[in-house]
Length: 391
Ligand SMILES: [Zn+2]
Image (cartoon, rainbow, N blue to C red; front, side, top):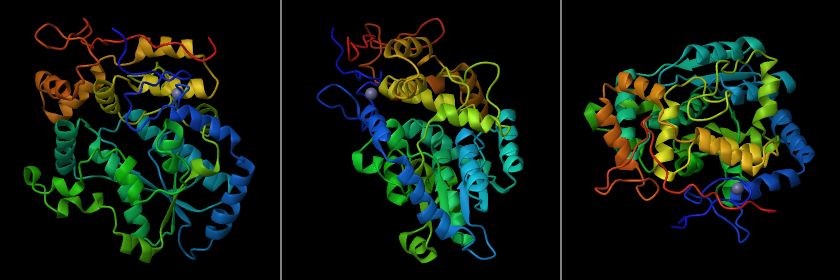
């Protein structure tokens, strides 16, 4: 049976990815976007940053911080702070939304970002009762165990910017430019409510939907609510993507920030992929990535392999090998942590995951039950990646 979807001929992204478009040559948006990145006049963009951002905001907010930088402590936040503080001398307030289950490496990196660059850091520690309920609702209803995390990391820095009268928020990459998405969104330099609702990963579930769920009240959700357009306009808060002004490339950025004390995972790759430099602060991210895998048939290893292909570091054949080796392995370590965190049983967990699994992408028995390998992983139905360009 031939594969009912296509793989990009340049990278190995399948067309099952939402919002990803392919051109007549069978090349995906994200690859075309990567080519576009090479045609952008980055010198001009850098000048734009210097004149439009630095000259305008540096020291202009008298007696206050110049900007807020939302940080997790990861490679991207290290790079954002490096650029804003070390290179351009802005005076940022770092704001971090506590991850779901903080781990040692994540804490160490978050501590490092503060000391390495000499910045104030505010950590928002959440009401765990409310947060846990939202995680479970996100998991069972839209198949995302990290739902409130994705919301909190976007709303809390914006709320603080308004409350503390800080006019600028410096975000990191524009994920539509890195991973593909609608053209208008790719060229965007600003993060606003519309971006959050469309691309912030909320999957159609709204914060208002949480009121009343398991006793959650409106007051419990104060910090998860994005300020209204009027409040934002009045406060004159502007959010920008640093990735609009500077060419984003994870690997050289990792090498750079390592010189400032950023630690990668030394004992092997992060669960669900082959790299060791991303999602280090949150072990439950592998469950989130696994849910993406069951829904769309590709996981985090595919994302990373595609980035490495687009940045010219590996060939498409190597990418296929990495995807085959790492993608979609049942994330035992993350699952065990999620079961402890949620109080769910393994069976109940699998049942929810199965309900989000696209059975047209995975092998089933004659009764329609999903087949599993001896490691408990699902078995892909289609493993023909097609021919790459130039063959
Ligand atoms: Zn592609």
